[in-house]
Length: 330
Image (cartoon, rainbow, N blue to C red; front, side, top):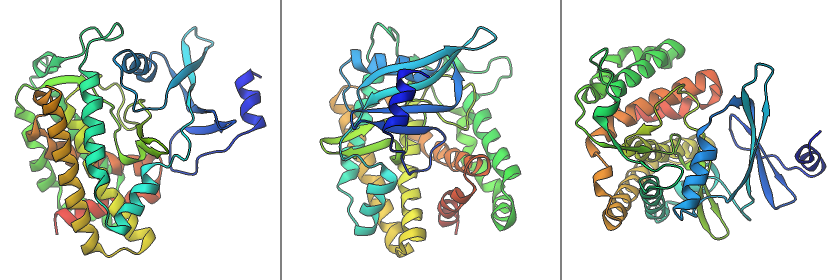
């Protein structure tokens, strides 16, 4: 048993939020995130942490170490990541639901600034990522003549249709044509700068703690395998804004919030976040990173991925993406 194993077993406190991995707080000083199952290296998180630290991005839990082991076949497996413990921290599925119930939206500007700062940092060269910005033409699937984003989104929709049953599945099938039309702009998307994005940026990845906000978990989207690490910044922003709508669905289901009130709250919070994001990007000289024409199709793709995630990992979550889709296409 390693020293970390002993420390965790001796004083652990598990997080009680939905997640595909398992995190424990050790001695109120560090958080050990165990990957379940262990992931073959290379993985994005260690390099991203090194890059962010070198360019001065501090709005995250300070990374301390990664734990790996050699597998029987000679490959390396990432077992855990060790980061600083942030006192009084709560994730967005707690604090943001409270905001939705109370009607508060001022937090959204903070999240917009935070995500813009993250993307600007990702676009800044470092020893780890000396060429952090690419362009869309470099990742086009020339052998098929198709845009890889369009392929990826279409596959997500088809998978959601296949995995979602019952009345929700019937509703999806009835609206499949509309959803495909929403994704169509990706097939002819214009060139846009590409950076290493967070890849799974939703409110649950943003902690509110004693000293502010921190973005965590740079492991990528659990429903996407083999995605190119370079993606449009719009993908992160689309996922973050749609997660506000998921927060609204949680507030309706678990806190008996009024659907019409929540719809207004979500619209205001989304607009505030996006405005703050754009303003901060412009202030930092990185306004060109965002192609707003990609936001809507990426939002629809994300709802499909939420349905895939629910089917594979957390069936009770299906109500949230379905609630968002039903509200959009009443």
